[in-house]
Image 1 (cartoon, helix red, strand yellow):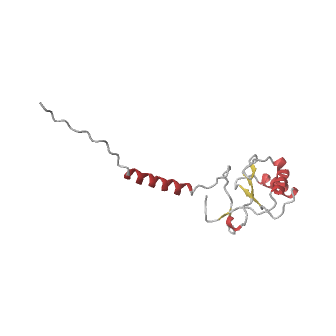
Image 2: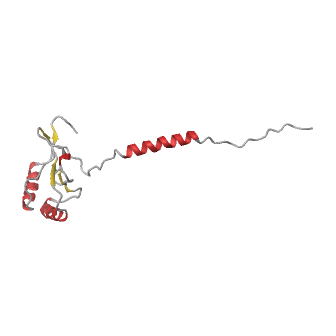
Image 3: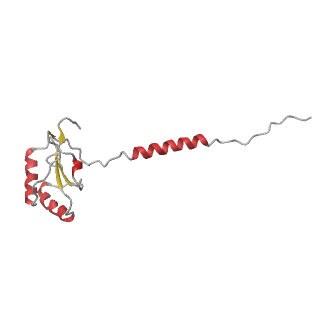
Length: 140
């Protein structure tokens, strides 16, 4: 007696849709990775100004002196105590002589701390420092 046996076919894996999905994922990751910007360690609410200038006007990226509160002062994302700020400013500007210096003070920063920072700038021999502001009609 002869039984009918079904021949097994080898499984076939269709690769073309997988390649399409891989290409779409690759394009997605490439496009989304280009939008990533360097974020500062401290988030600062800049004060409004009618005559605010764009940060892109400067030729070189400035050394940023950020003031957020009484204990939150940083020089290029490096925390610095107010007592040694003048010395740190001298060292930074000596190490990088061509880079300008710019001040970013938070809107809620105590005025006394900002005055102490300005005194440290004078002690370090720095004059005419630009301060970052934001245009009056834009909000963070």
